[in-house]
Image 1 (cartoon, rainbow, N blue to C red):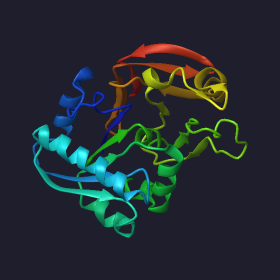
Image 2 (cartoon, helix red, strand yellow):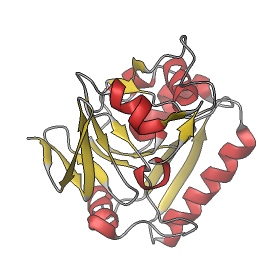
Image 3 (tube, rainbow, N blue to C red):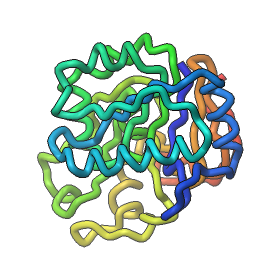
Image 4 (cartoon, one colour):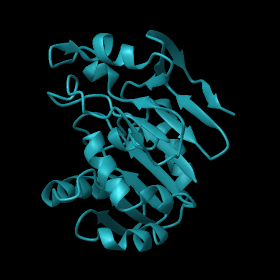
Length: 237
């Protein structure tokens, strides 16, 4: 399996994939010239209207990029019982963005961690999809009430594609305030004690092939409350 774990895979309001940091070229090389059977795994089980909208965007995006699309399937509540067959019959999986705990519950319901374990194609994570790819997911608070709720679970089991905890959209959320707390300085810095997070701006991504893993582009290592700028580093080799 080869995987691309992105903060965002395309510039804002753009139909194209990011060219920065070699993303579109590396993805094209990984996918090869074979027709694509794409499985778009939604973040919400039952929000089928939104799932269709985002799915259509991705189908059009890859068609506009020149890919030969043999099939494009959206996996949500309408076909969740066929998840095993759908994963088996695709060669490119897109893990959509969305609300991390909501998506995590859906992944758990369809047993995606087990289904994807021996997948031999390419996986692309977008935002929440990248976060839920970790073995243990850090569900950084996002919605009002989550930062101060004592029952909110910040650390939950994920897909196990990587040990890296990605925090996406740093350029967009670095100054966010949730429940009166600064998202990074008051919440995430404290949660990083004894742990390590990889903080990504849009345009940067993690590429892995099952043996090695590297950061493509710039980002930050957040560990024990300290942010350190990094760029184009090997995460695992």
